[in-house]
Length: 131
Image (cartoon, rainbow, N blue to C red; front, side, top):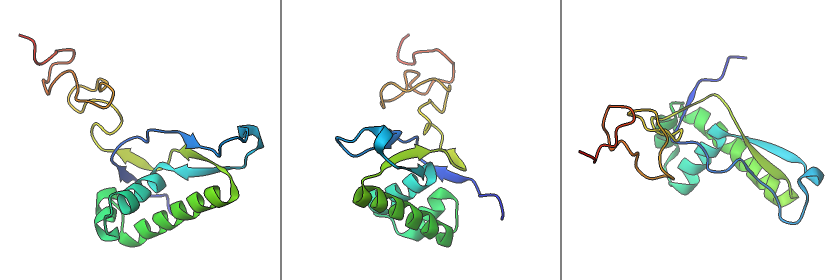
């Protein structure tokens, strides 16, 4: 079996998992949804992209994208229908610049999803708008 090719993902997921209401986590079976599977769901189902375009964005073939998407949909359906928890796990992914929550210019953190404090300046720690 060949090693998995690195898949391009726009940004880190905002959550680490989901579980059914009213059932303690200790009592639930857990399914692992990899970050690339979550990205495939986002591109196909939320963004409404055709598989060809979504595959280009992730850096994989259309056939590979279809397999990733099928696995993701099957896991989500199983979790919903059978009352299982879903945990988002790592996988062979590379985040786009700024997609990991850091500024692509200086590597510092973004402010709660808004623009970086550096405002595009290339000097680490500078505050762009101040003179």
